[in-house]
Length: 465
Image (cartoon, rainbow, N blue to C red; front, side):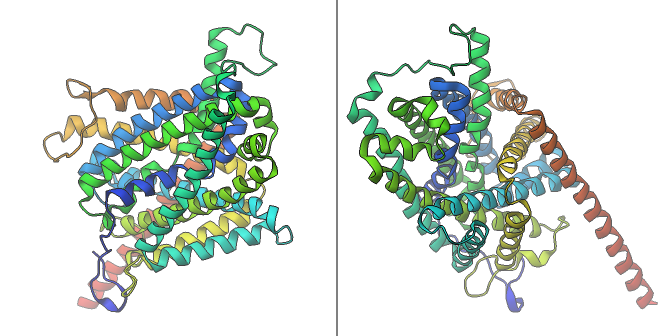
């Protein structure tokens, strides 16, 4: 472990148990996505959107199984970077993956911070949204710096507040009796009256691609491994529990919201779940859900800032990484990666400033990059099964295999590709450009790093003579 300030050795503090890690995972998933994505998804699939949630949830579970196995082998921060490096023994590819993850995490934090400013404008309409987003990022970065225990405790509190809002929708649907009197297979009116099964499948998978943004984040549980007790056992359990719990809640929320107001109202509303709450409790319901949305968005930003800083810490702490080793510095008193926290904060602020107004596109590109990442991770797991089966001890193994070939990682690749193909052409193009840009950045960084190291070696050799 790199030294902290003043040169004294220090380590991240292991204070997180299974309960906290699980709530951390639930908090990552139950973010701002469900409060807005459900409306857009309902506009695509209609009342059958609940099936899209099942498809997206199954993909999350399948990918989660792969991450659970890999995290039981490599129980450290910067998990994806380590997975790919060990599987392919290719530093360039592993660094590219690590940088893609950094981009995804930080851009997600920036996107949701702007979403927070939109909800805050309901209560404080006079402050520009970009200022509110920046203030939120700075304040939550301070919490991140102060300590992992404090960040996790806030996450636990905010996650339970989010759950209250979602359970309110579910209970309201059952209490009103609407849940028993709804056609859950109604599709948008511009579709044929008796749509072909292939059209319905297309609607379901198109909506699933968008809905998956609401599931994104579970893989970042691995980035708190260095601060978790018994991480090789705790992290896999926390991953799977948080995904399964969230999948069940999301499906119930989708069914409940559809039964309360129908797909068309959800689609045309800027605050779809608040609109559903208004159906049963009037303006007070809208107010309550809007307040809860503030908790949800701020919680997501905090968890992304925590995950992003730990990822940078983990990569820079590796001796083969091109990231400056100073980024793994641990604060002597707070025992948090303070330089990594600052870097993540400034990048998030920069994204808010540069891309304000087009963050909806960034959200689509983020999901595109995540799916590409999941394909690579599943390939890495399959490769590890074949090449290094007996080298690593596993406390968790993805079930069902045909000889050495793991079925669920293979299925995860197929589903990821299917959903990737449902994106609009513009999003696909932007996603490819983004990934190519990251690869080019890694190439330039490695080239500059080699030139600097060669210059240092020549200077040292000259001094020796």
